Image 1 (spheres, one colour):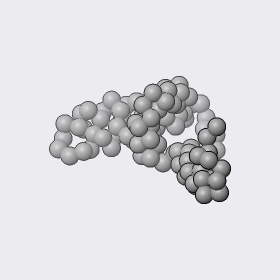
Image 2 (cartoon, rainbow, N blue to C red):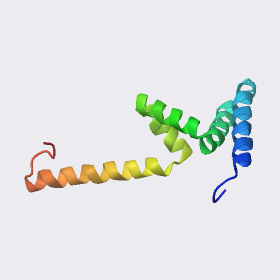
Image 3 (tube, one colour):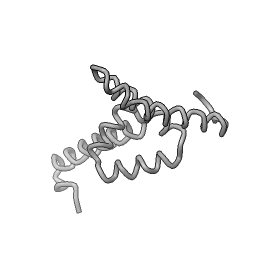
Length: 107
């Protein structure tokens, strides 16, 4: 949804996301990986509509960077894409610096 959402709509979407997360273990009993996808859909709803959840998610990403990397890829977050591009550009700049004789690029 584009634009600002009303507080009521955000609350409804947040509650729906929590309900979907709560239902995911029941779906997980069924054969196949269905519970994982249901949980991911609920997590997306919660993260998009709750500032508290976003802060907790960022804290978890800082504590477990590998988890954060995979979660960002799954959620297709723009910030993750920017970090990957910046890291790639920094890697290229360090390599160019070494070729030009500027050392290893660190101080």
